[in-house]
Image (tube, helix red, strand yellow):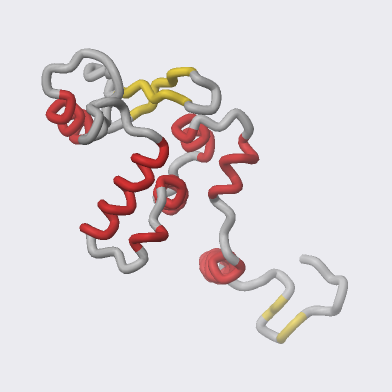
Length: 152
């Protein structure tokens, strides 16, 4: 943990490497409370073994937290759906795709773009919003549409 620069080191299970990931001060305060006096080792420990959580242990913890939060589809909330929700929220708040790529630790930008695929309905709403901001079409005058093939 880097409390001064607001970063945590995350183990990339695919590459077996550690990568710094930015976070906020509140998250670091919670982490500090969680680790108490420990100076190394995994952040989340199994209540049964006292060792680091397994992949299945993380999945179960997320599912239980979703149920406690009152999410009806708690059994469908997984670490992966949380990751997608984070990415979509980042995008909705106009965060940069390159910044998201770094946080998600993707090597290829196309992997990050996969998280941001929008539905056709969303694309249609966005199109309508942008066209309304643009103003009248250059292809339509007060007298009606111009000749086919004419571009102002």
